[in-house]
Length: 235
Image 1: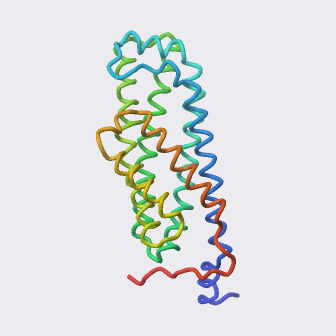
Image 2 (image 1 turned 90 degrees about the horizontal axis):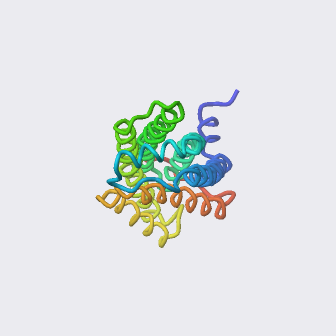
Image 3 (image 1 turned 135 degrees about the horizontal axis):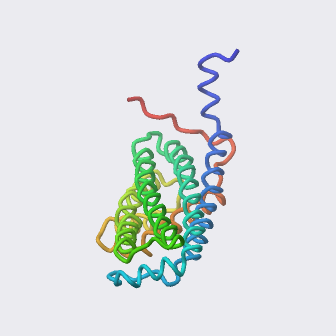
């Protein structure tokens, strides 16, 4: 039977860290593909901000099937993002030797995905009611407005925290991401915390960008075999 010291040492082996990087990379790519595909199915014809209620109701009636399928794919993407963020948390913790910023990034990811989950399901309700012929103009506008603010401003808060905490670890350690990319991600994070985030395309585009670019970097630069892993600082 392994001793407590042996078991602890096994958890810190580079092979375990490599698995975390690979998991983050593959799940991040899955997030980008699923979310982009899901939104592409129904984004064409999506009413602009301030659209009249009748136009919104017509959109749901015309695109009900595409909205349901697209929202379903986006929900799977949200689930994949949770896995992506959890694996990235492990990578960030090992890079810095402390889990404060890594946990902040993970918490931001959960906050953003919770808002996204609400946006996708509420949007789906509008499509389902329209398909059943039970969608009034007033209800369509209410569902659309709630889904819009959850998928833009509310989701952007969590995603912005995720981006800033991730960039901070990369800049502090010189690991995980190239410095120039960490700066770009920090700029994206700041923009997500401003009123410009109400533009829904910004939040959705940022989610795809962050997941894909971080995933590609992790996939192309795996942790070198035999590289020492920092132990978390004692609390």
